[in-house]
Image (tube, rainbow, N blue to C red; front, top):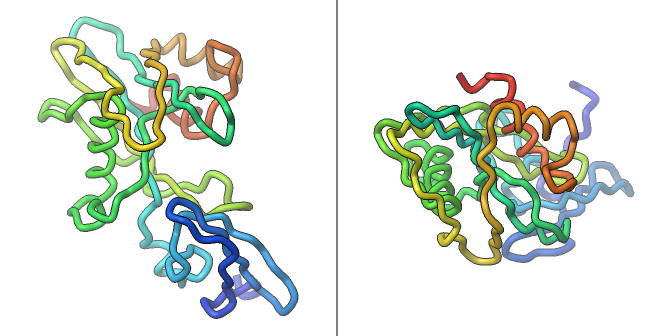
Length: 219
C-alpha cells in the first residue's frame, strides 16, 4: 500500500537490549511512536525490511507438529507440558525453539532447527523412515506487539515400535512436566473445550498442531 508508514533504520531507537529480548521505539512519524518487543537485532527488524527482504526473511523459531505413526497403532499427536514463565504455568506445548546462528548456515535452516528441538525436547532422533515437511514458512503470533515469528513444521515418526520419549535434553531455563500422546478424539475434545485436560489455556501454536492433527490435514 502506498500510504503505509515507512520506518527507516534511523527512525528506530533502542529502549531495552538483552540477550533474549529487546524493545525498540519505532518512530514512524514525527512525534508518533510504536514499541516493538523482539528477539531481533536493530538492523534485522521486520519493520525496517524492504518488501523483498520481508518475503525472504527466516523465522525466529520453529514449532513442530509431531505425529507418532506406530505400526498397528492409532496415530497420536505428541505434546508436552512446558513451563512458560510469563504465564506462570505449565502449558500444553509443541516441541519448539529458536533458530540458532548455526542453523542459518545449513541448507535448510528450519528443518535443521526442528530436528534439533525434537531431540532436545523429546529425546527422539529423526530416522530415514520418518518424514518432515514445511506447513508454513513464517507466521506471526502477536504482530501488534512483537515481530517474533515461527515456522510450522510437521514431523511424522514412522516406526515399528514406540520410541522412548524423554525431556532430559532440556537446556537453559526450559522446564517440562511430561508428555501427552493424544488420539484424534482427544485432540478434538481439547479443541472443542478451548482448554487442556487440566483446564488450562494453551498457546496458539498448540492450537495449530491440534487443528492439523484433528482435522486430518497431516495426512
